[in-house]
Image 1 (cartoon, rainbow, N blue to C red):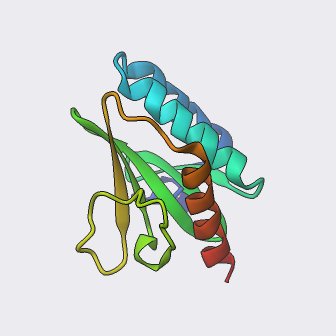
Image 2 (cartoon, rainbow, N blue to C red):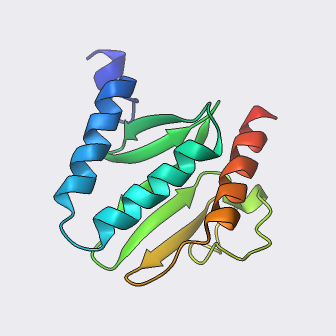
Length: 131
């Protein structure tokens, strides 16, 4: 098995973007537009952000994993790999709060996205990875 096809290994950038595009298109309810909006904010937050498709889901990295974007029946979940270390003055983290490392944001149908606070959180995650 090649490195690129190993479980959890990132796919080439174009392939990852295509997988994420397909995922957004396949979600024929509110979750597709929410995932697309979050993706847009993540990619705009820093020009060094790279899209990946890992563990069967969307992932974004910049010198290390920033977050994954999972979709469930009731939520679009953004799990930040090192969220417990990040400042969150707007209180965006609302899931996985008991974790010692990760933190997540669950977006439910009808929830708005505080673009400025979310962008600041992504930028903090990038800065943390760059050390």
